[in-house]
Structures are given as structure tokens and as C-alpha cells.
Image (cartoon, rainbow, N blue to C red; front, side):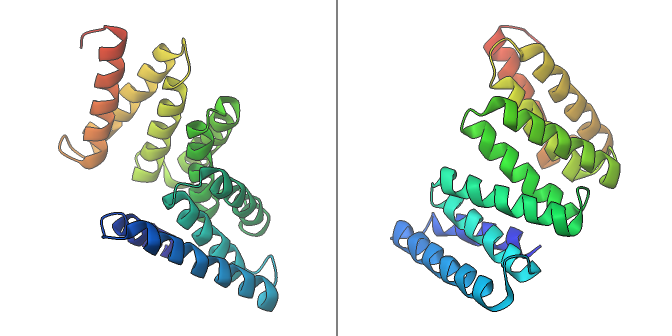
Length: 193
């Protein structure tokens, strides 16, 4: 998806000299695109929805999680209405929204969004897809951030790790992320693997 490429480009801006200036310019350009899309093709046109998603990615990369969260919620609502609950684009923006909700400490909202995303990806992609595994890890992270929920997070990390090892292999990026997250949880709780 084009938004994934944009997200990578925005991340690359962080490494450049004057990165903040470039990110601010990028957000300004993305705002212009959203304005023009809304004016020329309307609020619900797929190009407008994509432009709003790209602006949300830009704002998030620029550190404005609050504004990004509002726009991701707008995109999620529009994609649910136009593409349906289980469309990969709907689920992708739901995952991003849930992660932002978790980072802002909105635990109940984040958990509900991430659980729905995980179930949607299980239905559409299957248990063993990378998208499903990423959703499982995001849910585990959100639950792990809540006091007294370490056991539930541990079970989710173990499920993700087992799936990763079986499907992707021991050296895959997601396997290593699942292993790291589980290890950090166990270390913090004083449990030894």
C-alpha cells in the first residue's frame, strides 16, 4: 500500500540534517493534498481517504499523536463504511489507531480496537499471517502496559512466539520481536524462562 511507502519515507526523514524542517514541510504538503482532495472529489472518495491517512502518518511521524489519532479514527470510520470491517485497508488503519490509543494510555479503547483488529485479521488473513501476528503482538503490548495484566500479556506473547517459530522461523524479525517482548516481560516480573 502507498501509505506503507510514505511511512518509510517519513521515518527516513528523521535521519537527515534539518529533519524537523523536512517533516514539517511534508506535513504542510500533505495538508494541502487533503484540502484539494476534499474540495475536488469529496470527503468519501478513496483518494481523499488515502490522503487523510497519509496526513495522519505524517503527523504521527512528526510527533503529533493526538492529531494523528483523530485522523486515523476518521479514516477508520470511512474505510469501514466504504470497504467493510474486514478489508485489509480497514484493518491496517484500525491497527494503527489501536497502537496510538495504547500509547496515549487509552487502555480500554486500545484493547477493544486491537482485539477487533486481531479477530478481523484472523478471519481474513488466517492465524499464521504476518499481519495477524503483528496484531497479536500489538494487543499483547497494550495489555502488558496495564497493571496486573502481565499473565494475559505473557500468554499472548507466547502464542505469537510459538506461531512465529513454527511459520516464520527462529531468525525472522517478528520471531525476534516476540522473543524480546516476552523476555522483557519475564525480566520485569522476575520470572525466568
